[in-house]
Amino acid sequence: MLGVAGEVLITAGVLVLLFLGWQVWWNNLVLAGQQTTAAAQQSQKWIDDAMKVPKPKPDTTTAQVDPPVLAKPAPYEPFAVIYVPRLGADWKRTIRQTVDTERVLNSYTAGVGHYIDSQLPGQVGNFAVAGHDSGWGNTFIDLSKLHIGDRIYVQTKDGWYTYVFRNFEYVQPSAVQVLLPVPRQPQATPTDRLMTITTCNPPFHAGERLIAYNVFQSFAPPQEIPSEIAAAVGQGG
Image (cartoon, rainbow, N blue to C red):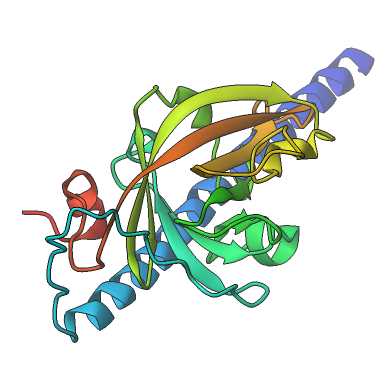
């Protein structure tokens, strides 16, 4: 009798674990889909708004023109959409102001947060963002798969900012100097336009942070959707 009871308890325990595993997987899948849909809707709104105004004439001068920089967004405001083709053909997320866990990183309509004291897209310095590696949509679970030279696209109402992946760094959670205008150099004056992505590492743990450094490459007006992500934006074909 004790043997039978023990087998029943073991079986029940296995079933509970399987159910919990399925629930976590399913919840992440559903949440990722909702975050993707929200980002697509925000992206399309900016494109639609841009199509209502004349397309800017191309700059024919030889002088380099600085990309536009947004005014500082309000807390929790969605101000950008990030596209990372390496993470999936249709991968996209909304970026909100602050890295608040409940209202941004765990949000059904966001997933990526902006470190409020860091720079904004296209600004000289360090545009720094964060997202979960696992759970709540598995936003950056595949971040470690980036290859040198991969492009990352950040869309705002002003247009498209293209960054190029440069390198990784693995740090302790306390290593906040990676968020400085010149990462890890508090006394340095920034001259480059950088983008830093942070997430937990390894997946399903929070023992350290994975840092992805990216360098600004170019800016294009909102009507000029980058060809690499045209399908993901819904403008392909």
